[in-house]
Length: 407
Image (cartoon, rainbow, N blue to C red; front, side, top):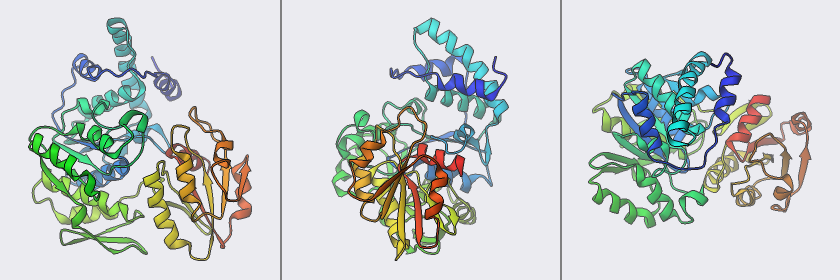
């Protein structure tokens, strides 16, 4: 019995298991008597999953109860499970983990196997959404698609946001292999919404579209950028929309959300789409955390995301110096990210943060040819905070969480 949220979360975090079993979630759903009587959207992709889920939720929240399951969190665990704008509460987390602890004990005895952290969190969301009688569940896959725990659910619609290099140890070393894994979330005769600008991947998309008789829509060519500054404005299929979120890539994520909603819900009121998109803000996605001096927090953690970050920052940098505060997890291509960041960075600053997958800072130093400084306390950044500088915090969503919680 968990009586404090810290005890509950410590229990959850202790459940580590690399063994994949595609039947585990289905067994647990059956044991818990979970009935899923709402529509489901599954989202995968290299980048943009969280933003797309947010856009869908914010567009639909005026007319229905939307559950979104995302990862990782930036400020607190509760962000991972939401209904409309409400995060799951600490009391609810403890309540459901008490149920799931009993389930875990049963599963260990029955199958000699541990239900891991991600799957326990997914099961918590399913219990929560069942009790709250949601109308739609939007589930963000953790890694890939084919073997992801979320893929044990049956989607009414599947989304692939982008394809790039990340988690190659699991998904493969080519874009083709990565895409095939992510296409594992499609279902026979169900719709697929995606954004693809890479002609070399068209054959793979078409192969799956034909094999599974998918109603597939690629939004990419129907997105037109009108203005990027001061706020992003774009058109999708002749309708104009505005976003507070930064970066051209968000126009494509938003267009996927628009198309997904119009596919599931015919003639959905455009006024709700406009309002939902314009009111969407997601922490650590080119987030302006201070205006004077300008400080930007971005959780980019792979080469494609870093290129999006660089594209935006390079347009606002002008004659200012860019101070890049960087850290990344050891399983990421930090060397390639740093090589890209070198193109616009004047000074790198490295600071340690607590994470079991952290990288030795000396490896960062060996990857760059620019000036750098190692600091032990975030307050040491104060000397760089002036109108001549822009400070960018990037390299990992986990690092962004660390920065967000100490700012």
